[in-house]
Image (cartoon, rainbow, N blue to C red; front, side):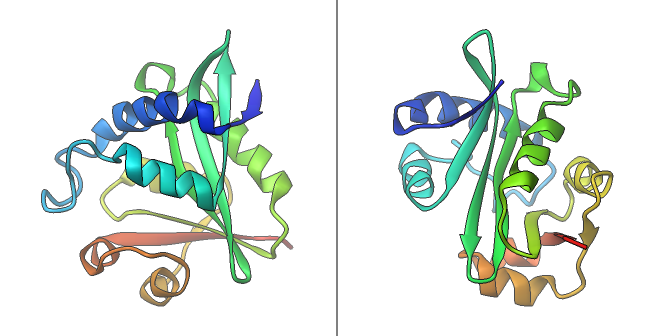
Length: 159
């Protein structure tokens, strides 16, 4: 079941993101990986700027995905599923739900260039790698230069 996350879900979302982000250890550059992967303060700021939706199973949040309208695009942000719940279609269901909500012509997602599983996930769902990733990351995201260097952007357009 999909639900819109609320401020009182912050601790659960924090735990879920940091457990699922363990997959990035050793994949992204060591200078970009830190513990926790996302601090509670950073998550709190992010929750003020975007909407999070989660997949619940028997009252337990097992996946989250956020989206944020920035200028003329919608960004998919912070897409995570607890490791033991991956490969059950939860990410696809959340993504399809968010696709039905976005109001812009273009949907973008950024991820780490070496996170092949994330890139493959989005490509299988109609996204394509975009060549102008540096310009897109500067325009729509607020991330450090080092993260921009080691990231990619995928796009999905309404036709």
